[in-house]
Length: 549
Image 1: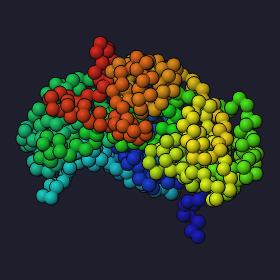
Image 2: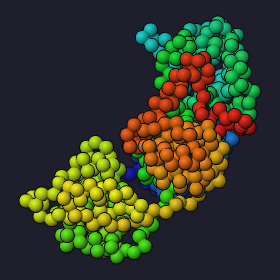
Image 3: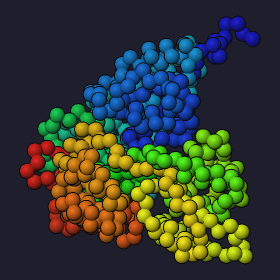
Image 4: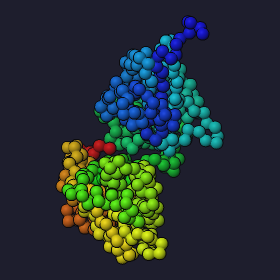
């Protein structure tokens, strides 16, 4: 061994990681792996929330400011003291992830940090990310190249010198300019002065790849007037970064056909989902696919039954062979049985020989996580009625036991019990948990609900209507109200709400789909009328402020 060689194992290691331009879905698989093993996470505030969710709960985050909490000028590195933090953690033997916006090699100010690691013999790696100059135009519907092979030049307006502007201005290449909103007109002027025609098309995109994204189409000569007419400038937010694409590929007609992201039916809508985060997970994913921002507010809390003896007898009956079936109608029911199992020192093996039914996919996933694969999940509607459609009638020849264990909430309906009895089964209908009204959400959320800060609310049951109004107040009259069925709609109307959307089937996914159809029709109507496409929260008569997106 060379005694003068640096000891790579005496110090930690550093991963310089590109977090992309803002959309959390653009993180690479390697980035997620690196974050999961990090001891220390040092991130640009713009992407802290994007990367932190993939890190361990125990990860040390010396810099906690998020994009909403930090005001970082566009022309300086995001954090000037990160190099010292990175080196100190690495010297202490930690695994450090240094996350930057976009790509470390193109967008980040990390070259000096890499050199410092190399000088001290600290092992480091680079995980590339999607650069803002590439990702943002893609989300804006602006291709940078086509079959004709147009050259592409990338310009950072903050550091570009006269020679750079002259070279790009004298060419016909597509220019991708990184600048700030209030400097776009100046950058356009530089290109015109360098030889580009004033009628050369350009697009300007702010907050690219996020649901706050907004794109304007203009020409080099008209961009200042377009931003002023759109009341974008002058603005206190003029320093926020933008990506401008200059060239024929950014023409208005081209972008109108290719603008796939901003044309999503619920783009930028803040949708309130009055369910717990666990219950709303798949629904929120669906809303995000439509371009919405989902905000979960629990309206119920789950507590043990007041008299646990009935539940205890039923669980013991599972072990002694009292039941042929057990039917789970919610994730909470799975949780209640699992907790009772753990109390008695039991595990999933206690289900041996018992058929297991789940009312839907989320309940089935909770069972699989418990180690139980359900024997029956509705092939159609995921509800008690759908479960009964597929449930076999009792057959004394093939079913040695005629009894079903049904652990459920104290306020559950009798639909499943009555249906099973009609099929010939005996049912032990057991209260496994109680549902009580949840605590009120934070004051900011309550203000947004009552003041029109949400674009839509999805009500999935009558109880969610009653509980939300009870803990947070009635949604503003500009908020779109979507209900899962007639009973829920009736309850909403009884509380003075105007129901705008009704699900064609009693399914949360059909409800989200119906809201997306409503949003698409609203968008199409605005375009046909020549009006700007706005969210419901942006049209509030008499309001003195605009809702935050």
